Amino acid sequence: MTKLTVVGKELYLHNKPFQIISGAIHYFRIVPAYWEDRLLKLKACGFNCVETYVPWNLHEPEEGKYQFSGIADLEAFVQIAAKLDLYVILRPSPYICAEWEYGGLPAWLLSDRNMRVRTSYPDYLKKIDRYYNVLLSKIKPLLSTNDGPIIALQIENEYGSYGNDKKYLSHLKESMLQHGMDVLLFTSDGPRDLMLQGGTIDGVLPTVNFGSRPGEAFTCLQDNFPGIPNIVMEFWNGWFDHWGEHHHTRDAGDAIDVFTRMMENGDSVNFYMFHGGTNFGFYNGANFGKEYAPTVTSYDYDCPVSESGDLTDKYYAVREVIAKTKNIQLPDPPAAIPKMNYGTIDLNQSIDLFSALDVISQPVNSSTPKTMEEVGQAYGFILYRTYINIPADGGKLSIKDVGDRAQIYLNGVYQGVIDRWDNKILEIKGAHKGAQLDILVENMGRVNYGANLYDRKGITEGVQLNYQYLFDWEIYKLPLDHQLAQLTFSNENAYVKGIPTFYKGSFSVEKVGDTFVELNGWEKGVVFINGFNLGRYWEIGPQQTLYLPGPLLRQGSNEIIVFELSNCKLAKVSFIDQHILG
Image (cartoon, rainbow, N blue to C red):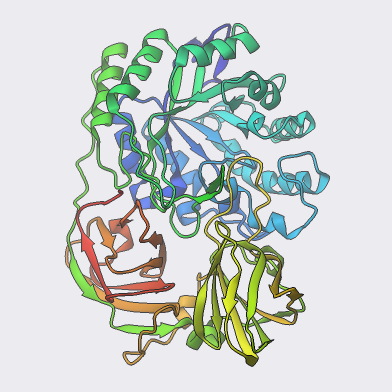
């Protein structure tokens, strides 16, 4: 392989004109056993390249501790692409957006109250440099200049939508060059003058992101940077969902019309997404427009290959356009993966959170509430406990501020919810002396885009009873990672509405395949399969089922644990063969 280069308005590879026909597939949103299946489907659709982000928070989950195995095995994913004769575009920016938790930035950055992300703030750059020393050493052997498949690297993502710190962009560029990243470097921004002017830097190729009106977008690109190739690094052919909204779809005909015009014009295109995958665990991000809006577990994106790997009408329409415009015969795609109906099972064992608390977490004592980041926690839940005296005429409880949703308990009795949508004052009636106050806060995903990136979780300032701040707290960290193994379940626990409870059941599988977890009668919580955090559910939708990839199951006995935050009307779960996204 040779270096991808710019020659006037064209790209050249192997000394020949080259049109990028790429699709985004995020290795971190797919179980590794399915990486080759998804890449084969990309190849069979006529694409010559795969694009993926690289999330910093996945690879450095704790400061100075790195992870590159399992779903984080970036090198293995790239090597599979190479085996299939696909080129690779990597976007290893410190920040990726991607509707991913905190835009890929590690939560531990926020333990420093002075931290300034996406700037030339010295401490931020030092942490990037240390990460790049590890990451880029793994990428270097995979570059096309070293006979690998990686032909291009992004230095920052849609930076012009956030800032214009050229010293920051220069530092990223120089760092990549110093580490031997001698392939094509690029930026990507919205097709607006201010965005392109703020997000670009000399010596790095600008590209644009859009979903429609390619003529307008490329005209803006050419007006700002005359004579460069037309490249859309994110062609949005679908969209994502937030909790409480409707399920987004995009008409295939509309998306194909835009794609056809670009193909016929010789423009280079990267489909965002080609296959969306799943926000497993607590890795969904959130947006903040008029209000906070967390993204659902599914990242189906209504794109050519569905969340569960099925080929859609959009897939076949895209395939037809590529075959026609490039005049090529395409191979058959892989066979569909079976979708299984395993029936309905009882979750007949349980233990409530308060009974398990001292077993699964040890308290951190603090005079004031500390945020998740300040106590060294990234994701999940956090519980704050103190003891209060309430006057005879009752009291008004408030939180300043909460990230993101708090359930309030007094002497173990549910009182209500305070959340960032409606940071209301909770009325507590009757006199209580030495009452135990528990506040369970859920991190529903850090903001991944825009001006609200300093999105600390838990209680960020303090708790007030009437006008008085409350002090002397016990803080219990509940990331729910290895803690589930410490739980002791019982058949005798009585269900109490409003009390967070872990429920466990088992089911047997003869033939392993993909399935979908349906939670009728459950309100809000998280599902774990054989210890793997499948993701969140919430009755407000639009998503009604969770995708369960077959490789997470075992032939024979399997275990499911559901952590229900509030109300389980019927402790039963169904495994069905249809995905219900809204």
